[in-house]
Length: 81
Image (cartoon, rainbow, N blue to C red):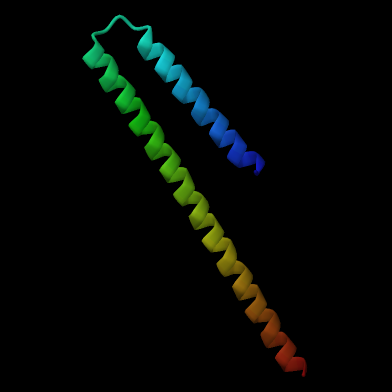
Protein backbone atom coordinates (compact mmCIF):
# COMPACT_ATOMS: atom_id res chain seq x y z
CA UNK A 1 0.00 0.00 0.00
CA UNK A 2 1.33 3.42 -0.87
CA UNK A 3 2.35 5.87 1.80
CA UNK A 4 -0.33 8.39 0.78
CA UNK A 5 -3.06 5.77 0.89
CA UNK A 6 -2.01 4.65 4.35
CA UNK A 7 -1.96 8.25 5.50
CA UNK A 8 -5.50 8.88 4.20
CA UNK A 9 -6.80 5.72 5.86
CA UNK A 10 -5.11 6.66 9.14
CA UNK A 11 -6.50 10.19 9.05
CA UNK A 12 -9.97 8.92 8.22
CA UNK A 13 -9.89 6.33 10.98
CA UNK A 14 -8.67 8.91 13.48
CA UNK A 15 -11.38 11.37 12.47
CA UNK A 16 -14.06 8.70 12.73
CA UNK A 17 -12.85 7.51 16.14
CA UNK A 18 -12.59 11.06 17.45
CA UNK A 19 -16.02 12.00 16.17
CA UNK A 20 -17.57 8.84 17.59
CA UNK A 21 -16.02 9.30 21.04
CA UNK A 22 -16.91 12.99 21.13
CA UNK A 23 -20.50 12.29 20.24
CA UNK A 24 -20.86 9.33 22.59
CA UNK A 25 -19.66 11.29 25.60
CA UNK A 26 -21.72 14.38 24.81
CA UNK A 27 -24.76 14.93 27.04
CA UNK A 28 -27.40 14.67 24.27
CA UNK A 29 -30.47 12.54 23.69
CA UNK A 30 -30.00 9.28 21.79
CA UNK A 31 -31.75 10.56 18.69
CA UNK A 32 -29.48 13.59 18.56
CA UNK A 33 -26.42 11.41 19.10
CA UNK A 34 -27.41 9.00 16.32
CA UNK A 35 -28.03 11.91 13.96
CA UNK A 36 -24.61 13.36 14.74
CA UNK A 37 -22.96 9.98 14.15
CA UNK A 38 -24.77 9.62 10.82
CA UNK A 39 -23.84 13.14 9.74
CA UNK A 40 -20.18 12.58 10.65
CA UNK A 41 -20.06 9.26 8.79
CA UNK A 42 -21.72 10.82 5.74
CA UNK A 43 -19.19 13.65 5.76
CA UNK A 44 -16.29 11.19 6.05
CA UNK A 45 -17.73 9.02 3.29
CA UNK A 46 -18.07 12.00 0.95
CA UNK A 47 -14.53 13.10 1.70
CA UNK A 48 -13.17 9.64 0.89
CA UNK A 49 -15.20 9.49 -2.34
CA UNK A 50 -13.81 12.86 -3.41
CA UNK A 51 -10.24 11.79 -2.71
CA UNK A 52 -10.69 8.52 -4.61
CA UNK A 53 -12.14 10.41 -7.59
CA UNK A 54 -9.24 12.87 -7.44
CA UNK A 55 -6.79 9.96 -7.48
CA UNK A 56 -8.57 8.43 -10.49
CA UNK A 57 -8.43 11.76 -12.30
CA UNK A 58 -4.71 12.07 -11.57
CA UNK A 59 -4.07 8.56 -12.88
CA UNK A 60 -6.07 9.26 -16.05
CA UNK A 61 -4.09 12.44 -16.62
CA UNK A 62 -0.80 10.59 -16.06
CA UNK A 63 -1.83 7.85 -18.48
CA UNK A 64 -2.77 10.41 -21.12
CA UNK A 65 0.60 12.15 -20.72
CA UNK A 66 2.46 8.87 -21.09
CA UNK A 67 0.47 7.97 -24.21
CA UNK A 68 1.24 11.38 -25.74
CA UNK A 69 4.95 10.89 -25.00
CA UNK A 70 4.89 7.45 -26.62
CA UNK A 71 3.17 8.85 -29.71
CA UNK A 72 5.76 11.62 -29.93
CA UNK A 73 8.62 9.12 -29.66
CA UNK A 74 7.03 6.92 -32.32
CA UNK A 75 6.72 9.90 -34.70
CA UNK A 76 10.38 10.81 -34.21
CA UNK A 77 11.43 7.20 -34.80
CA UNK A 78 9.43 7.11 -38.04
CA UNK A 79 11.19 10.28 -39.21
CA UNK A 80 14.60 8.66 -38.71
CA UNK A 81 13.66 5.38 -40.37
